[in-house]
Image (cartoon, rainbow, N blue to C red; front, top):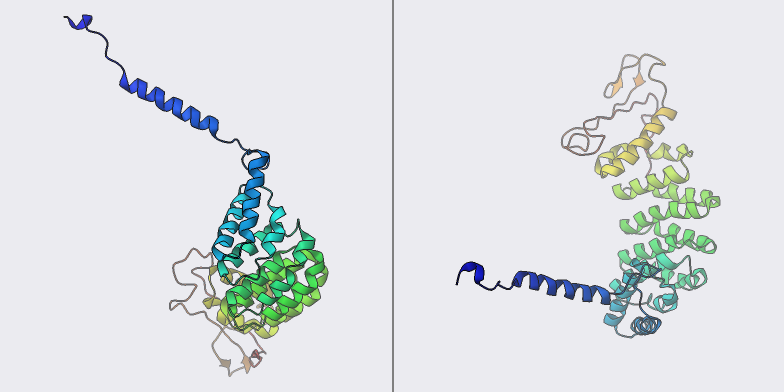
Length: 324
């Protein structure tokens, strides 16, 4: 028979695509649609069963089940569902020895503490216990969460915790204390005097990343108290090269403000920048050069301060070394 008389061949590719399309349509029809709260539109019975299982996991005595329950809870929170009803079950897990469980509990409390202010007050005692924990990461995390709970009545307790952590042996805890100061100030600006005293203590710190955080707190809480910088000015100049890039920006801005407000105008009298003492006119002149041998201002960096050198001069304060 001729080719025109032969029966048409079945289109297997088209049939396969039709079957795949029908299968995809069936799967799509069975998928739950997003609900009003950003979650999925499950029926009430399914939501109730899920809540009971999750509450059972959170109240379990098994650490693994608690951890899985907290992961599911944070997943629901990230989907936009209201999980504040589990607050009481989560608060019970603050005293857990597992660091992973503690971290997840803290993340949950930070997000829901404003909605459950009364229940959040019940967790303050547990946070205060964690401030004495042997692990500095736990101490820093406990202070971070306490300062993140925006409840007005606990401000005095948080200030006491910040004051304690400001002199902690661990620099990570002291850094957390410096970060907590602006949070407390935003919550209650009337506490500026107490917070300024803590900042004054933290400016004595000799750890670069702690000092940069203390300067950041100073710039936000009490930028007008430039007198706090007097005894620490030279130390800040020396530690500038040891800070990270963002810390250098903070410290350089502070030094710029200090130099503009506290130094004599350079054109007020004739003088020259020199190293040491000028024996001719017996005027004490000091030059501080940030060396370029691998220093922070000479290395290749995205820091906008890269490629510069800093100088400062003083005519009569050569012997005013800081006493830290």
